[in-house]
Image (cartoon, rainbow, N blue to C red; front, top):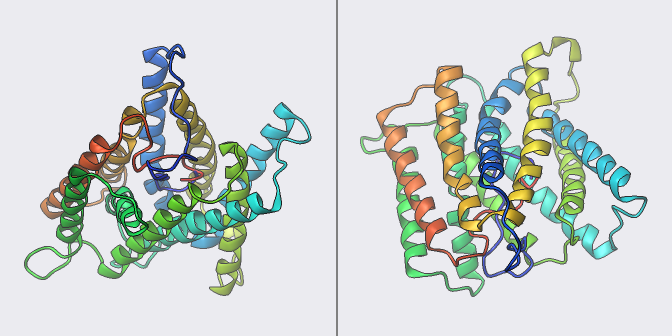
Length: 338
C-alpha cells in the first residue's frame, strides 16, 4: 500500500496474493532483483521523506493529500488501461476496502506521521520509526493465534525475539528510554492498527484486483485523515505559502515513489518471485531507513538503537523464514497498502 508499513496478509488465508502458478516461466533474475531493489530502497526511504514533509506541512492533512493524489493517479491509469468498468465493485467489497483503508492508512500510517512530527525532543527519528514498524509481522502472528490459527514453534520464537528487541529499544536497561516513549508507543499503536487491517484484508470480501482494492483503500484512508486533520485544527491556519520547497518535494516523492512505483514493483514481484524472497523487504526496509536517517538527516544511531533494532530484525527474519513456503508471511500488498 502506500504508507510506511509493510502490508500483511495471513499465510493461512487463501485470499492473499496468489503465488506464481506451477510451471509458469520465472522472470529473469535481473528483473526480480531490480524490482526488489526498488522496494527495498523506496519503501525504506519513505520514513525519512515523511519526516521532511511534516517539517512545514500539517501532519495528517499531508498524509491525506498524499493518498488522495495517489488514488486519483492509480484510478485514472486503471480506467484508461482497462475501460469504464475497471473500478466496478459491489457494496460489500467497497465497505470492506474502506474499513481496511481506514485501519491501514488513517490508523497505521497516520499515527506514524504524528509520531515523526512531534516537537523537538518528542518526535521519533525516522530510522527508529522504521524499526518499530518492523514488529507488524510479529503482531500479525499474535492476531492469527488469537483467532484460531496455530503458527509454528519457531514462528512464536521469532515473535518472542522481536518483542525483546522492542523492549530493548523503547525501555533500555538503566531507566532512560532510547527513544521518546510517547512517540514510540504511538508508532506501536499504528503498527497494531496496520496489523488488524492487514489481517482483515485477507478475511473480508475485498475487490479481487489488488490495484482496485488499493484505490478504494486510499480514498477511504485519505477521507479519514482529512477529517482527523480538521478535528485537530490543522486546516484552520494552514498557509500553503509557508510550506518549504523541500516539504513539497518530499510529499511528491511519497506520492510517486512510495505509493505508486514501489507498490507496482511489489505487486509484480508477488507474481514473479518466491514469496520467501519478496518478504525479505520486511527486515531490509528498517536497515535502509536507519542508514538514510543517519546519512541524510544526521539522526543519532546509538548502541542501544543498534542492539534493539538488530534483535527486532532478527525476530522478523525468523518469522519470515519459518512460515509456510509459497505463501505470504507477514508481508503482502504494498505501500498503498503501505
